[in-house]
Image (cartoon, rainbow, N blue to C red; front, side, top):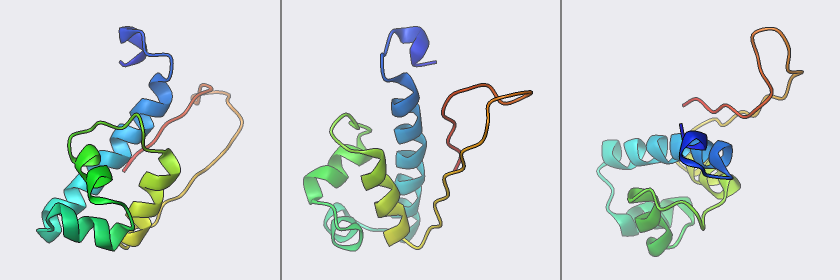
Length: 94
């Protein structure tokens, strides 16, 4: 979808968006404000604000994964050959 809009980094942005959605769901579920979320995740409050607004250009995939781990989530990366039903590319599910 993002590739259709001409984003060069569409796969990375899609992955970041999926992780940010999950992170925002956890923040909402726990009733955390941005300062509390920042303290728990080790992020700054301005970074949490960016995640909350899905402004993800200056936030790495690794940082989002670390934030999820800080909120008691298990993050798994699987690399396998692209063949059959799995085309080459990046896919993130949460």
